[in-house]
Image 1 (tube, helix red, strand yellow):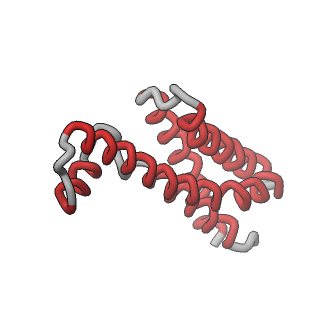
Image 2 (cartoon, one colour; image 1 turned 90 degrees about the vertical axis):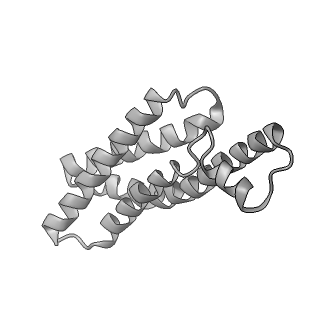
Amino acid sequence: MGTIRQYILILLIVSSAGLLAELYLLGHYEDGWQLIPVGLLLLGLLAGLITFMTKGNSGRMALRILSPVMVISAIVGTFLHFQGNQEFELEMYPDLSGWELIWESLTGATPALSPAAMFFVGALGWIYIQIPKE
């Protein structure tokens, strides 16, 4: 189980770094709300690196707190992206409704499902802390 734990931790670190790079490249720092996922990913990356390098409990304790917050943030972010797209589509095409509105909201300018990527980072952190240390 120790090797699996290490792989999960490495996936968490690499995923956090990759998503941070993606958010930076997308300019996802224009207002305070957009900085929340950036901050969570930075904290997750730091907690993962501390855990990986020190084998101590401080990183694990941080992951215990951050992981569910990341999952909640992913759900909220997905909703906010979808809602923003929906509002934009309704401004452009007020007669849209039903499945057509849902589809256009999912495929709009703001990637509606991209915040869900943080869900998996949070899940990796949660899985990591659930596996007992050897």
